[in-house]
Length: 148
Image 1 (spheres, rainbow, N blue to C red):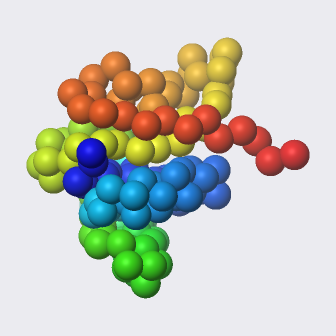
Image 2: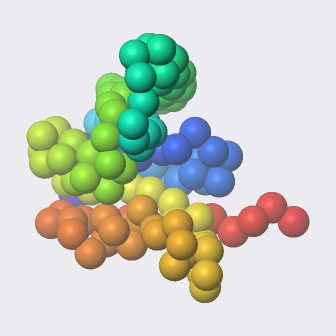
């Protein structure tokens, strides 16, 4: 039985393919849902004050967009009778997912794998793989294939 489900999303339609599965699980188990969006900070070296102000505004804007995104999902799920909350944070994606799972004491993390393989996975890494290798609780991964 899952009492609380964490749903990390990257604001892509592919990542949202987990939502019908989460909705069913939440209804079947009377679970609450925590939507999470993680904003990665740009890694910039040797910048001056003017550039710092620009990046600071970009980060604040990205966090605000992330907040609005997960808040809209929260409202959609609440309208369907599912208890839901949201969080938007900045940091390394895998670390923030794991930290949020711990902090929120969730029973299940539910997410999509974007299905990257080969060189793409080598260069970009895999959030799903990083979470899978370090998570200490139940994990549901749905492979989201490309649109045809």
